[in-house]
Image (tube, rainbow, N blue to C red; front, side):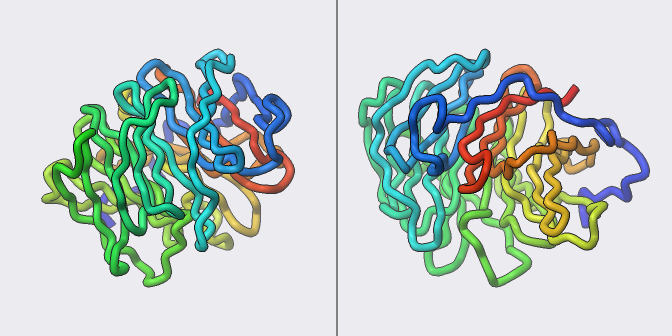
Length: 298
């Protein structure tokens, strides 16, 4: 597989544990329902934004953990496949992809409605550095990636071919690097992420042989840290319950793994800060649900 390593070199992060910088339990902090935190994204100022379909709100937090805003932005509940709405922040705007409503809506950072696009079967969204939004959808069960600006669709990229005909929309994730290359994971085993070049001419598979062969390894989320040039993948190993964060170069070379602090959490979302730290969000319904934490790899 292109991009795989045998694990014998480049273990730059191997056996490292992430340190928690700060932690908020959003239901306790803001008086929200015990579950319903759906997605998170960080902006160019280092703030992190969390969408909550349980309350139809978007919550903003500064890098130092302070609450900066709580916006009333309507977005529906989870759809029939239990796929939650997703969020992307770019150029001062907030985009909400709502699978149940089949819409991609745009708001200002003050919560002002700016427009909406109708898109069927939305799976995931992410933002480019140039203000564009990438939308992964599967109309007619064929995945495709569309690129939007504030006025509408401007281009299209090929989507990677998944290994299995079974697709769980809740595990489909996507992000973009500073050069416009797109990274896609369909979530299920075997562990793999695809890199689609900015011009759409190359699709490269990235992954590694996991150290826990007895577990089915799910990719809960992925995020590209453009400042460090690192692709982070958030893994959950069924059976052991272990969660790891893998690090790859943009070309697919494995740099090592971070062990997450042992806790009751099952994190479903990861996004980078501006200085190499990472934000994690527990999107589950069990103990620890609604936790937003900031961790540092060193």
